[in-house]
Image 1: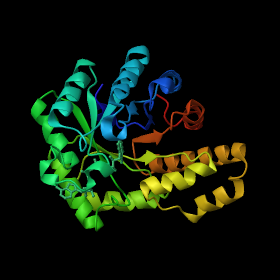
Image 2: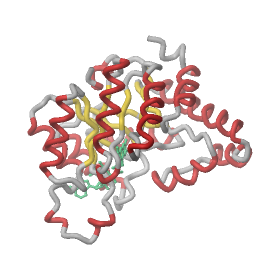
Image 3: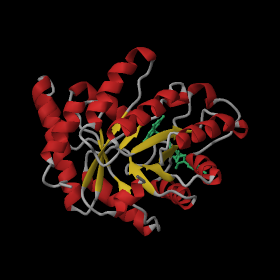
Length: 292
Ligand code: FAD
């Protein structure tokens, strides 16, 4: 199923992101965790692509497994900046052969090894180059792209960021998924601005349940997200107690999601961090709201 068709149904739904194993040793445990999440039958699941593409085969293996065993629609992530055109074309063919209809087209972070090199020699500089590649492959994929309610760290201003986002959308994107955020007002403000800039396609908010205190620093570093005082207080109070922190983090994410639905968002994507118990608890908290 194409994600855009699901979004057009206009019913509150939940989807989960998982990440592939980093090596062969962790393959089985990751496979089991992602299967446990697939058993919840979310609206769809996305499988991220290892930075640099070194573990790219696992993305497809995990996505294929979820789809064939549980029939959950899958979204395969693909990054381009550290790949050659031949490699990307091969990946696109593999995704097509696996009958996966949805691709998240990303640039990826620029690896240190490339930072000082001559950009004119890169096959792909931005996500938009990958979107053109997918369009020219003419395989009728449903294409997603990333967006940043708190602006991408490399952008000088939000205006610049939204201008680039509009170009990316106009190149042929079907939907956008956001970077994580912990204050819904930032998302509503962003949506207002992009709509004003003529970006009208569906936007899927990405919500990250923070379930242990160590995750806080890592997540902020990775995303640059603003931490509201309400969330900081919760970490201060419960961060030392793993069970309490987990419960509080799930409650915070649930609250964020309910507010998003109440304000007209249809699908919310949960960064599940391969934790089936967290995914199940959030889904359970929303059971009557997302009833099929
Ligand atoms: P782009 O859209 O290319 O934007 C990157 C920067 O360049 C922005 O500042 C943009 O404004 C600017 N820009 C764009 N076009 C131009 C242009 N023509 N000229 C000048 N500037 C321009 N990373 C992974 O490695 N694997 C994953 O699976 C993954 N999944 C993600 C999922 C989501 C929902 C999100 C939000 C991010 C994900 N990332 C993933 C991280 C992502 O790869 C990084 O944030 C990366 O730095 C930017 O990727 P992008 O596709 O947004 O890039």
